[in-house]
Length: 208
Ligand SMILES: Nc1ncnc2c1ncn2[C@@H]1O[C@H](COP(=O)(O)OP(=O)(O)OP(=O)(O)O)[C@@H](O)[C@H]1O
Image (cartoon, rainbow, N blue to C red):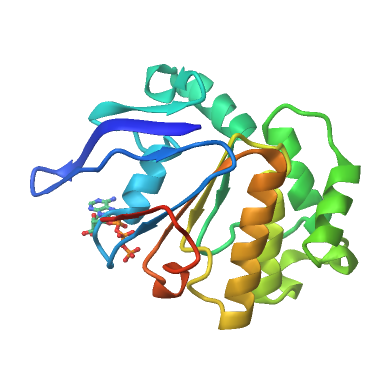
């Protein structure tokens, strides 16, 4: 469960945001829609505590993340929050498999090769584990990105424009996989996007 309360943030006095409250229960999915510049990425970064709000709270299960120290925030995020970025950020010198295992390492968890292999098979890139990530197509890279986000079975999955570079077929596949994965691990799934194709797929929506 993720819930926010009266989040505000400003980049400068001329660029201030007051966001509507967000609630997303375990196994539920929420779409946050908005045109370019309305603050979607800013909100997603606040939900992940990559940015600290000026006021308000972000609670994941029982933990108010805004009350954690910077070190506690990093540890909590690595363990309990999976993030899928618009463009996947991988370590290019590592294989696909090692990029997945990096999630375990960053969360202080033992390397779980079995889970990496299972996810790769489920998400359709089981044959690519020993390749470098740049050898994969965009759609494949986005699926690796989803696998990486769910490696540690997080309580919350946050996805920032996960489909904006994808064709309709890959868009449908990525959305289905995000929903399947969040349901399987019992996580809350929050997707921010301007991609109107996703509008009809999610019942719960907030417009910025
Ligand atoms: N680091 C920053 N410093 C100052 N202003 C910023 C910064 N990052 C974003 N902004 C501004 O804040 C506003 C919201 O940006 P944000 O990236 O959250 O929007 P968005 O809705 O995700 O847009 P897009 O769909 O184009 O990615 C924009 O006007 C942007 O110029």
